[in-house]
Length: 248
Ligand code: UDP
Image (cartoon, rainbow, N blue to C red; front, top):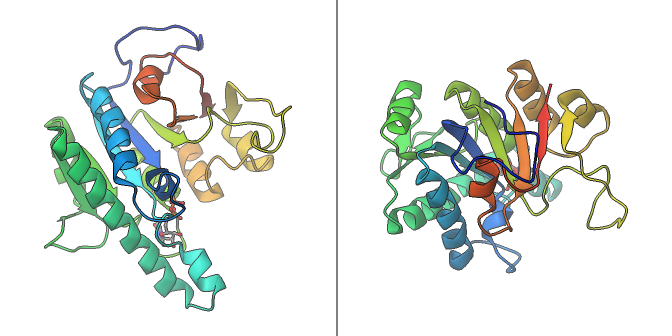
């Protein structure tokens, strides 16, 4: 069921049963500018736990941009597919860091990789992942789609569809989608609701075009919210706070 359109109030329980949380790798690096910042990982794990405590089944995809991005590697002369595989491996490190932080908090998890690496985590088997969710384990999907030339936004959309998630929650530094960059323009205006087509045509930068098209073709709403707001993820799931809903 969609969130209430009244963004200032709403029920204290979640209207969602199963969701995908997508965060970029950079969300885990704190102010360091690179890599993993354990207190930040811990803080996000606490946000995830608070939603898990509501009884919501949670899938996660974490990017790898805090460690390596294929495009930056190829810009420096590296062969693109190799650089992309390095980016995918970076997401596995982030997934393991999140797994460790969540399990410290007593939340059971599985890291599930699109590239098999049996000694480290589980391979992706759709029915098995669904079963983990039913058993209330947080499923952290790693290694993107397993294919070069994609992003973890597309991986999150793909897995959200496969897991029958009701929405993708994209945690960012700002509380939604703006008509222009709010960090640069004081008069930037936030959308409460925006269509997939507007995101594509106006190049609003919510996610890359493949991810938006995949969400659109499967009617999967994308909720863009601020992950920097303490309690923000739980609040958004209860229909409170500010966010942008991208839908048809
Ligand atoms: N990547 C890829 N295929 C995928 C997902 C990711 O090749 O299905 C690579 C790509 O090089 C990308 C990197 O992994 O740059 C890290 O992912 P992303 O840039 O999406 O991370 P984020 O920006 O969310 O931190």
